[in-house]
Length: 574
Image: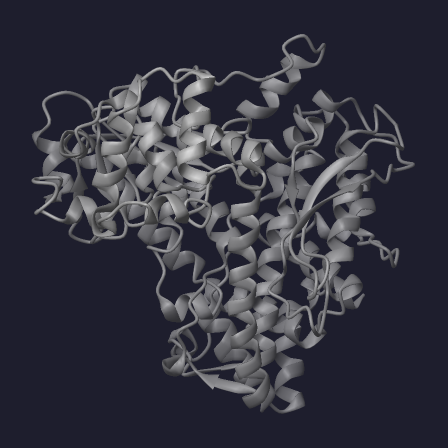
């Protein structure tokens, strides 16, 4: 993320002296005489607390939670104050970049599907495919982060810009990230590398933006134009390729661009921008559009426009107090619906050549919107959804309309923010039942659902929906429940808790379908005001895969005996 190859440049001691040094984070924190604020980019941490085997098997949630808590705890114990930042909706000017990244990931996943389709099973040691269940990890990371410091999700600005503004305003000691954009933003904080991080010894590489500026001969105010001309998440290297090749010595790209920037005034006029555009793009097709893209790329580094607490647009709205309450309580999906921002409809790890859950998920989304916007009851409201509708179609933005419930919906503030004894839980449960009824009109028995232990409720609701609406195999739903029970009780063979040696196709696909659907069902619980019934998911991919492989060869009598343990949870078979 950020500026391609900039980290290689700052690592090159022949061009940037002392731009990069090895440090121990804990020692830095302890030696710092003043308060040591470490600002953490959560997106960069998505892959560091899991390994290849765990990623391929789904996740080992208990192991993940233990590692993550221990990591943050050691930072705090050393004397650090932590603040966390996560991505909100996709910013308009980053849509194309996001679309391309997701399509690339889908294409990579297809190669794996082709391999496992051909063989039915596949040895883990032969695999390089290690993409973890990002949506689940992101959800768990956010919940853990709140235990150790403020979590800020930017809904209207680029996350990097908000993080940089916060770090500058609060005199942060360091930013923990892998995004090279943080070498560009104004500020005197250090940049600690996540990629180079030893999460046990807390050694990493420390980059110094001040040293980088000095090596380039640029001021803070000149760095945004330098970054825009290098290419970043908004303007691609492909658009700038002609400009980069125009220099006689293209081995010194960054110094060449810095020298180009030095010749320009710090405060750029429209005339200056046209001159820059001519040098960069020449007067070719879409010239004006490309200049505007270059300007957007430049302006993203302007952190003066960001104030804390974060501004919420629409101060004139009568429900603005509710909007602020929604944001402060972390009800981000409700905010996205009310503000009609982009909502991502995720793939459930499917090979879209064989199965497509997109229509089902869009239907769920329309019902969620219908609950939140029931008070408007306008059938013509358009909500923006980012989705991949089929194997052949690329990621795109489409518009959808709400499906409104016939059930009465309490006023939003009453629905979203329960009070003890408010008498609205029966209404909330009806709304949950209605959203999950899907197109086949299967209604979950909420009386039975809410008599279960809290830590089973969301899991059982998720499996009910998948079995009834998405043709999720009952056998696999049973194994999911048995694996969760075994993760808690550890009553079976200890070998079930070891990494499996190979993967079976159905288990590999459906465990990810379950985990990603679980995150969406969690969101449904929250938007109907039933968040008190949510707990951190307990799922161990090792146990699930080993148990499923044993299940395939198990005698029916043994299966029946095991199912008795979870019979009260099998609402999908009642």
